Amino acid sequence: MTASSKALEVYDLKLTVVTPFFVGDGIELDKRSYLYNRSRKSVSMIDLERLFKLIVDSRLTDAYEAFMLGGGKDLYEFLRQNRVYEQELNELILYSVDAENAIVEDKYGKPKPQNIHTFIRDAYGNPYVPGSSVKGALRTIILQKLILDDKNRPDMDTSDKHFSTDFDKALSSRYINTLKLHKEQTNPLNSIMRGIRISDSKPLSNSDLTLSKKIDIHTDGSDKDIPVVRETLKPQSELQFKLTLDRGLLQSRITPDYIIDAVNRYADYYYDTYIMKFKKAYDEADIDYNDCLIFGGGSGFFTKSLLYPYFGEKRALKITSELMKRNYKNGKHYLDQKEGISPRTLKYTKFRQKLLPLGVCKIEIK
Image (cartoon, rainbow, N blue to C red; front, side, top):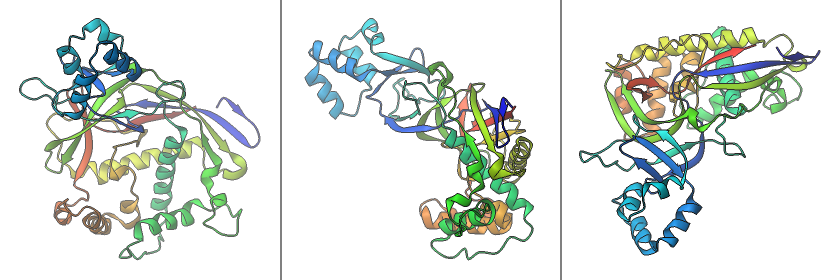
């Protein structure tokens, strides 16, 4: 704890990235917007204003228009074929990231079309993680702890088409909105989460980034590449936040020890209930989930849903498979109950030739 008062306690919260971690900015780049260097297995993000100036100065406007309307070449190939050489290319580059495990090449060594989802950045262009993302993850793990401790959970009508929305509201009312500061229990003023504040992380650098392709792992341990690539934080990257606990709102309920206990119960449940339903892939890395949050973009259904802890495995399997059948009609979710888990995929990626789940981060609070 770095500072305290009677009402506020301020702590250092550190997340160490264990597996590639993603928070997106909503931007998606296609292959005509970045440079893929085959020999270096790297992708370079470019300054588009400099690119357009180069196109005009090199009298390549017509060729560039045809390139943009066509679908064959990538930007690097187009520029090299039009005699734009390495020195000029280097002047376009903002930064480069390793793409060895992300960009798929055809038999001729050409990259297959892959869009890249970019990492969120601050006003100065630096990668960072919003405190709201971490707070959302803490809300999930605190809710799960409260649910598992509640032995008298009321039943719910899961057949209603609005069940998903009603379920989240019901959880908030029963477990989160308990402050009694407003006569309507559903009012946000009653949320205990108001007593938890998390700053945005300190800025990171482009050297902390890599590219990660999406890989689905099936229950038999087989994997399937999905044509989605994300800028992610590399394992061993460190994220620094400030955590403020408002004792005026929380009283003695939520402390750093309480949070760490909730994190570990969440991680244990995640491993025992979900991971253990899947056969280990041959090149899958061993992960120590102790003191770990699992969250962020692309981390998958199981990291966000509370259906299993609330209803128990058997009933949650049936509820989830029905929801999946309703929302994803082509996903063969009628097979989920036979497989014993729904959905039937885990969301993984590759880093240094090892399969890893997305979004595992070790938490420390001091």
